Length: 262
Ligand SMILES: [Zn+2]
Image 1 (tube, rainbow, N blue to C red):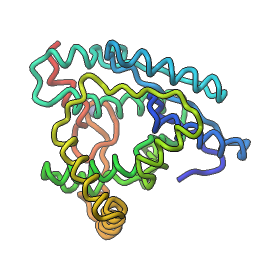
Image 2: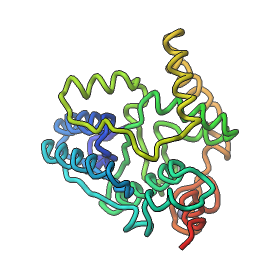
Image 3: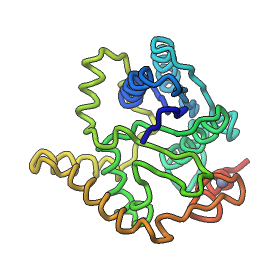
Image 4: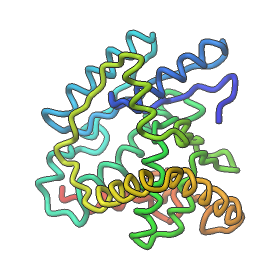
């Protein structure tokens, strides 16, 4: 996933996953003098929630000697998640937030000249998203969202998920053992009903049949290898509006932003 001279833009929210990832990457980076790390924090505009996390992220960056860049939805998109939650939109604020966060991190990473984008999705996140995409009937997306997303033409920044094989429990343990101060309050907008059901289902399965999450992850990796040559999985276009990578003509973020009343 990493090269000795990478400039890695790490998404750092202030939660246990991203603080653990930052910590691990900084340890690695110390061994490679030509590498560089910049933390990207996104302020979605969620009152009473994001301020605390941003402060935690800032302190962690100061302690580790990492430069932190903060980008806000308000500056980038002219609105906030709090505002969006008041609007009559087709999808939940969480759906908007996920797509816009990815776009915000893309923009920040391009701005600072990064060579890779790293996010802290763990094994649980990955298999939950996999099942969610399948339950939504979006099978191509399930096959596309690989932990190491590369564009063979080199137009778009590669995205990596170094913690994709680490169960959430182990990330929590790492954060506790290292004494990280991390945000433990859940987002006030976080009511993704289907994801909660999928999370519970997977945890029950894992408890009764240990290894379930790994098996799902491994099976998907095999399917991705098999499907790697097919256009539906590998084709990435430049969004006609913003130039970001998308399997469609216009990217999801642009479609969402168009749907927001001015
Ligand atoms: Zn776009």
